[in-house]
View 1 (cartoon, rainbow over the protein chains, first blue to last red):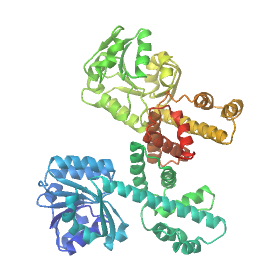
View 2: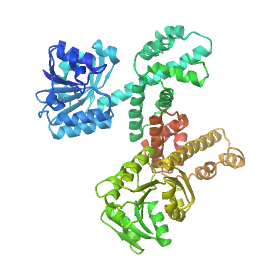
View 3: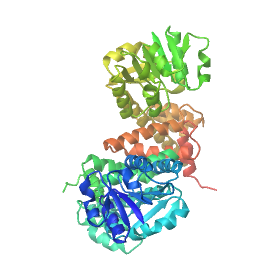
View 4: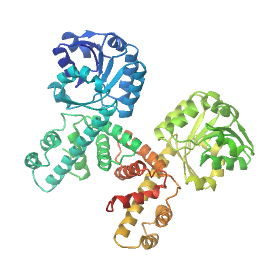
Length: 290
Length: 292
């Protein structure tokens, strides 16, 4: 298949490699040319503009940071995509932004599919991402060859924008659980008990979760440097809480966790892993910083 | 003085009429022409665009719903900036995001137009009785020029600081009143569920350190089960959303306001947004009682 790809960050780069290795023809563009060198080395065609990527591609994938970035690319892509083409966006953006882009694409006969992913850099490298997508149901067969080389699951949630709603739910459950792990660690530590052992014991029981495994593990080993930058989860919470206010949905726990994330940012920990939520609590309890 | 006024709703209409009664000439534009009807018999001129209002006024007051509306009236096509001469003062009395106010102020400033943010507290009754509390952000010079207008609409007028400072004060006001309404609703629900008369609790507490205007006024309306607005719950939800957006932008922890904002989300989501914000009591009662 002729596929375009734009956005070669932690996620986009391994995803591009998987598509090329699966035998797809890729047209790529990047703001800084060097970011796409790995792709051309594997046989991708370098394009001079976003529009140039769109021309001749059946499906163009984007994987960038925020709603505004996707919207900007979408406008440029529209001038090059042929009717019947698909713009497949893997970024995490506001559901309302996704719906607005889909509506403008539709006027040009182009489909927009929002397909945010969960699994992080590791999931992208191992092609084990969980993909949640929104778009017309009949697009599923055209998207399957892409999804199958990137992830271990791809679930259609509903129409355009629905994938982003699923991603918002995903982020809310994950970060709320990270905060729960941090609170458990504070409780264990204050009681003079080793949180590492508490975690180990809990992993096999009803409180076991990926959050306890991965982020709880980082808390136990006090390894806050690696993993997911907390500022990205903070950004996700702005989207999710804004959506909740827009539709009148009460999210009391998420709202409280959001405030802990705000404090984390204020303490300058935004580029550290989200397990740093533990350190926010430690500041509040007066435990000496490490 | 020639005073432009845009936004002639529940608040704006009585505010504009106070200015006319004080001898000022009104210059008006309205999105919906029927809003102009109450001004047919007073000293007021009407125009086809905000730009024409700006061209004929020394000061233009805006009193609209939210930041995008203020931005459109000020900087959109045929907006105030398109017609205002250098020296014009635009006074926005809407409640909007402080950062949005600063940005609008900067862009009007490039055209030589001064911008003052002057949100109010006191609701429709405060507007009708010219008893509003007005919180002002802007330069001392602009403030001094428009202060006589403020004094015809409010009983308390305070210059808080530079551009955006009025909106910051209003955001603080909404944190205190929002969290305050929740605190009173929680205390009353606690008393009632404990089998104690909430009216007696209120009466006793009014004399102590827990005294507040909210306990006195909003508390009485809760006891009267009078949930008519007043100040509509959906507006309080909007204002708390501004507060939480700013907290996110600056990295500020506001745990009580965040929890309160979620209660207001639930109020709006369950169709009670047109009630007064004290309807929070009804939501607490519903959540903490056995459901059929």
